[in-house]
View (cartoon, helix red, strand yellow):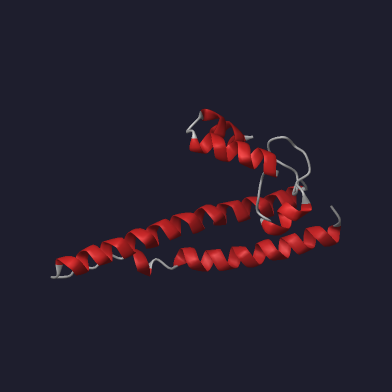
Length: 125
């Protein structure tokens, strides 16, 4: 990967990092609101649950973006963490924070869906 390509990905990742950092700081949606109306309570609980799921997803994505920036600094960005093959540039353009090539990502997704320990091994690799 050329220096220009690395700089492009680094810029994309730094922009995403700033965006996600701001989103993760905004925890207004998870505040518990009390209401005398039972239907309002249910609505607030549903909105809070959605906000918590969004916060969890964004936090996970933030960790992946930070890890990708670390890989750039360490000089191994664009290399699959599992099979150590180069990640296809089309995949990096679509998901610049990905740690895996498409084949290993599919393997990790299947293992995660099956709740197998192999998923944990992939994530540690």
